[in-house]
Length: 296
Image 1 (cartoon, rainbow, N blue to C red):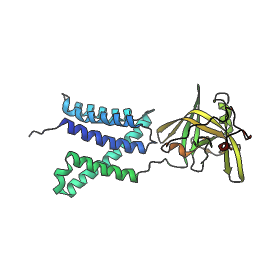
Image 2 (cartoon, one colour; image 1 turned 45 degrees about the horizontal axis):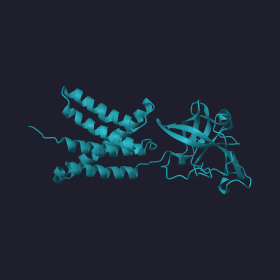
Image 3 (cartoon, rainbow, N blue to C red; image 1 turned 30 degrees about the horizontal axis):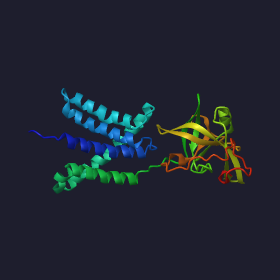
Image 4 (cartoon, one colour; image 1 turned 60 degrees about the vertical axis):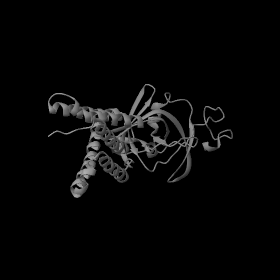
């Protein structure tokens, strides 16, 4: 028995289904991939699906080549993988979503035999995949787990400082000029970065329990890496401020105290942000009458 396979149709099915999967993985992984990388990764996955039918040689070698290009290569292309652990977590998510989509298609084929021909066609597969994608996207959480510990790496010039952080929904501080979220660090962390951070600071007003209001000095950190559950997310130009009351005295996360309270708004999909305003060409923002109105 011989079968005819159309390369264009097979590539289209693999490309679209892989794009569905990558979008779901990206949504559950801090949205670390860009749209261009997702499309490129899906295209590589589509090519990987063709290799077992195009390459000569033993079947297991051709299947191995297809998996290497279509799965491993697809993930490495779509996501900025920084460690084997991160790759493994992404692979786990990809396998889980693949199982859900494949299981749904098989269930419909067996449950409705009269539609088998339509469901196994190009548009049937893509249609079922699209419905599963919308369902999983709606059911799955695109947000991180609040009140969770993580590893934070503060990068400033040649300095690299690793601390234990806490992603806390109670931190809603924003820098008043740009509207960007502010992360709180311990005074010891800020002291370690002093002299390496860009010059200048911003006044950040805050409210806390036991104190009606106060102000903090906010500094712009060039880059911040946050790792939780094996997934690493990179942020640039992050505002940080030191807490005068301390952050945590308890020991946790491999006997290391929490030194940073991360604002969960960092992980939300970025909308159009207001550009930073230069306030009267001053190096430091203060509470004087010449300071911009939104600074305090």
